[in-house]
Image (cartoon, rainbow, N blue to C red; front, side, top):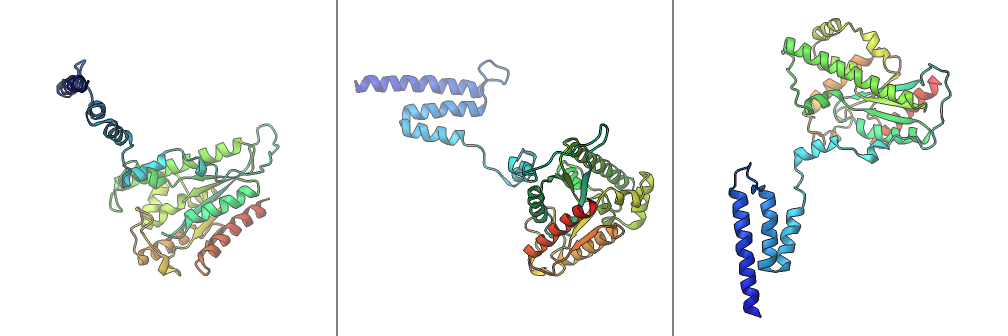
Length: 308
């Protein structure tokens, strides 16, 4: 009985070994061609026959495991649908807005800005939850420069000449279309809605010299007055590097490379860019972080009350 079993296993071994060798050595177009993962699968079966069910099972378990996620995979995972994030700003008891034929539901627009490490993401999450409780749907338009850079676009630099003007033109085109798409979709729902732009069009001015900014406006037939008028409110969260230095970090954002001093300079430039907006709320670091988030939420709610 034992000898028959051994002969049977030897026979199976020979057949599987020959099949795997043929598959790996065949040309890609050959009918016998097999991918290396496919060949490994049969090696797993072979291990189960020769080494026993335990070894084969463990090998197949290892084979079926998904590849380990590296740092780049985690960055790209933001491209996948995240239900919890998508539903974060959905109103719990939204009322339907009655409107006349042809009228559009007015959508409130907030430009969320500020220097590096100011707490924009945390603030957005905090006031989205509060507004949802009050019956508002909150839409979060993504930061457009990040979309371009993650997509492979390269910033040409301040001295990029015509390449710089082209980069900023198409950035503004995408920013405008993103804002219009979010506002248009929100308006079509007939529900009270707020669209939060992760940075607005005026933020661009903080990153380039004034003469180049004026030239960009001229080439695109824009005025600062028009860009400012696109938002009902500007919510500026001051960088932690100004008043909360112990909490300033670049560790939680790969795109953040500024030193604390550079962060303070950039923050002040952004305040200057938006200073002509009639509803420009600056949330500093005069309280603890929770207090900062609460003040930001109060500012947004105040804007909605003023507009009603």
